[in-house]
Length: 90
Image (cartoon, rainbow, N blue to C red):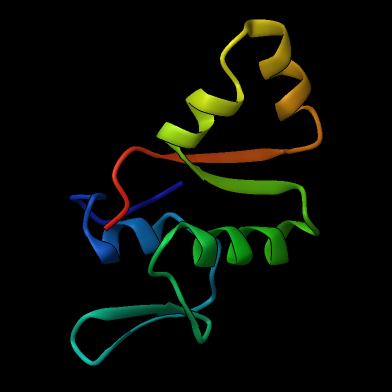
């Protein structure tokens, strides 16, 4: 995977998502193939659309709450081919 650096910026995070075209609108909103990449819910939607639901984007805080024990973590990740964990969602 290739990404712009730094990847913690809106453009950097968007570059890590599957897309044909990235666009910067209003000088602050990045869109991947016309869909806003701002926020984990939008990134999750983009990932699910590109992988027929076999990917997920989740905040690290929520991941730790939902998936702490090792066995539970394996069960949680089993339906996915790709998991994006964001430590800071701007």
